[in-house]
Length: 566
Image (cartoon, rainbow, N blue to C red; front, top):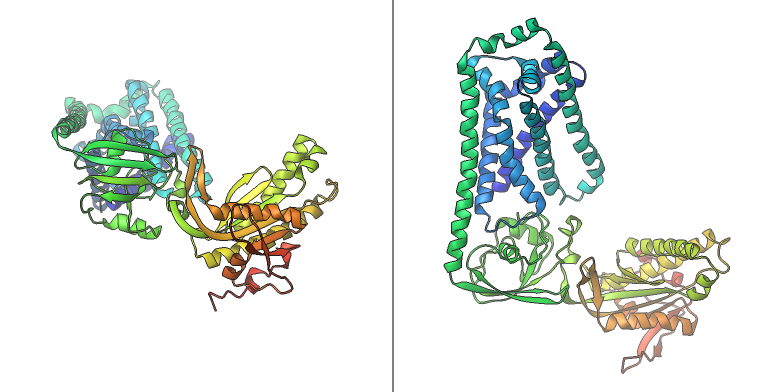
């Protein structure tokens, strides 16, 4: 509910700000146009309904900001979170006088002097007010855009409109500031006329000292109140920290399988797992900053000495969306009330694109999958006859063709190794589906290689040839590696066997060797091919395989009748 209130109040305030910015940009044309357009951008907010809506949104947004800062168990945050908090409290300090001299003066004194008076004060009478206004414009817009960005980035369609959104995010404030500056220079020229200035200040001067006392007196009250609230919250955090030092500590055992790190902490009772990790400077994924909007902070509960708190509605919704197991929880939503042992499921530097991706939830889990290895034949000889740049160009064309074939078939492109490719199938599906997709990928790879050879016929001394090996079985699936050199991969005998089947294609002079188990799981029956038994290094028993001179001999995926479906 708090998240929805923050979103709705932020939306209202954003529309309010957008209207003002649009009006400011008209200063590039004329002061008259700026004043005329206020009937559409500002006056609606001065109606009874508009007043209630804007005051309610301001109050809700401000109270939620205070509550968010108060409820944080730790003041260790990401840079953008610091900016949001600091800018949120700085905006009222910068804009109070402006609001009081516009809406306040209109309500209390019946004055409505428009843009000319405001710009005269900011550019001629008190230039520092102009600097404050421009600074406030930048902070208000940046605060709004950051809020929207860190909410929308979990939406799959957001990346498609991001370039347009970023362009507008730069263009709108630039036009607004340019409009204010342009109109400000017009006012400075007009202020050379004493008659014009006297006419402009006639209404304000008629109120005497009451007008100035209203503006500056209330501004002081707002500034003292804001600074007082910040001071009280900081005092509460200090008292909370002192109290924690006296409380009995609980044991938090944290394991990060991506880097093989295991840490034991003594932490006070209360607060979420994510907050305790932040307090102890332990890197842990949290794209949304611990707001329960993504799933990147997810952990697996290895052991707990007490009953875990029940799932919140938001946490349950997100975990169901990624189809997480019963032992998976969100670190930002799980309070610590007993000794606990947990394992991180994502690397600390995970990005927003992985926030709700199911297969990246895996970390050291055993699962049956299909593995495909492919390698270019006689590539060393081929590269010796070409310049390095030509070799790089050829490899990139080859990798693009093979990568597209794998992805179109629904596989996970694990890695490129030299001139070789490793791909996983069935990571988020059954082994039967994974085996079928692996065979389809092999067929597509063969077809794409043929097209590539025809395209490069004038640049190659001989066509590219590849060998493909496919096997299926149990593997350990997880995000493994170190820092940026980490990602979803698989380890186990099935990987080694698939690699050795690929190597055997050289000896047998074929393009594809697939294990009989993979073929059986896929539901495809090969006609005109006999099953053979071969010895595989590292395996005690011979393995049943099928050899195909070309992977295109496999049927298309739409023609394969799966025994599972039957």
